[in-house]
Image (cartoon, rainbow, N blue to C red; front, side):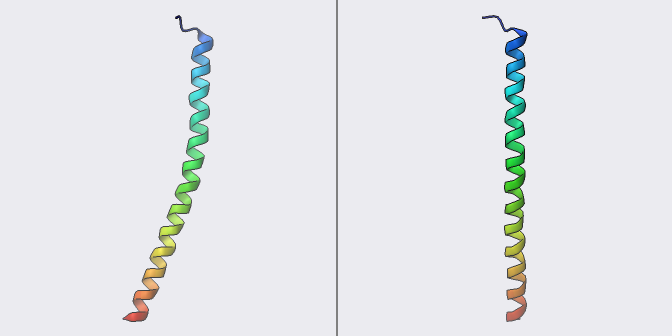
Length: 52
């Protein structure tokens, strides 16, 4: 099977679309994870100060 320029263009387009879908989703999820850890840290810091 010969790989035509059209097939190469389709492979490139598929890879491009895959990255454009994955990276924003990962970035949004990472933002929520960082918010969770920040709130968890702030909660632990305030609790430790109340018991000291």
